Amino acid sequence: MSKTVVALVTGGMGGIGSAITLKLAQQGYRVVATYSPSRDPLQAAQWTEQFREQGLDVHAAPVDVTSLESCQSCIEMVESDFGDIGVLINNAGITKDGRLAKMSSDNWQAVIDTNLNSVFNMTQPLINRMVERQSGRVINISSINGQKGQFGQTNYSAAKAGMHGFTMALAQEVAAKGITVNTISPGYIATEMVMAVPEKIREQIIAGIPVGRLGKPEEIAETIAWLCNDNAGFVTGSNIAINGGQHMQ
Ligand code: NDP
Image (cartoon, rainbow, N blue to C red; front, side, top):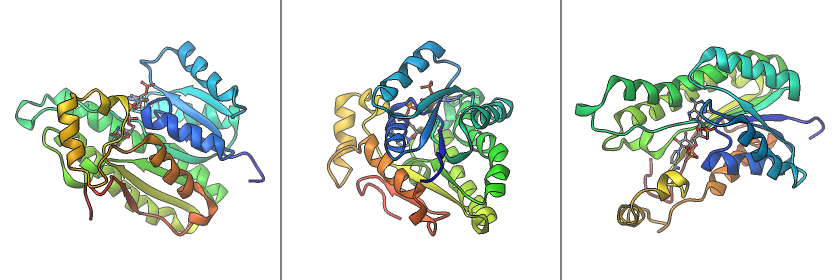
């Protein structure tokens, strides 16, 4: 890379986000990992230190991905303080599970806002900048449950499926401008979220994964690093499943 490219990773301090941040920083990107309003800014600043100690160019920025205004300010701040954003990883997400019969409108809205509306909020203010520069990578972290649906997750499955609709439409709009847009749909990955599931249920989940184990956050990060590469310029509008063979389309 001749010029430092900034990679913006939403939820970049979470389980999968941390692995993405580390991998992209190791690849030579200046990575800005965003954190949510619920995280202590001091803790976020300390978190970046572990990377700086390894000589990696990692920074932290606050954002509420559910707010368009917050995302606009975040993008302006990142570009003015750190440089042009060449890579956007829409990774922030939450779950609020429950059968539809008992689901509150708040739990529906929060999951749609954080997983799906966030993708509009972060990408819309950035896309014209990428178009002007005639280059960019947008990668949306969806889920296996957006591909196959999941009991108790009408909100999450709808949001994650919607992310890929966004990917396919935007990929067509910006393909001729040197920008690729792709979705990654992880299966069950060994992050805190999944490790908190009772062991017996986790064993049942693993029994349904042909590879016979949970995925690793690093395995998601590897694919992202490849998609960001100049050599992956012909890959756009794809939905890449990384699920150990649990669901095939
Ligand atoms: P984590 O909970 O560790 O990470 C989610 C991140 O989202 C957190 O870092 C959090 O930031 C951020 N976030 C949540 N709400 C907001 C908000 N309003 N504004 C800004 N940031 C917010 O989960 P994972 O690492 O496991 O998941 C990462 C992504 O991968 C998610 O989109 C998830 O749906 C998806 N996924 C995960 C799978 C798994 O098995 N783990 C499987 C399939 C998909 P902070 O930490 O600062 O609060």
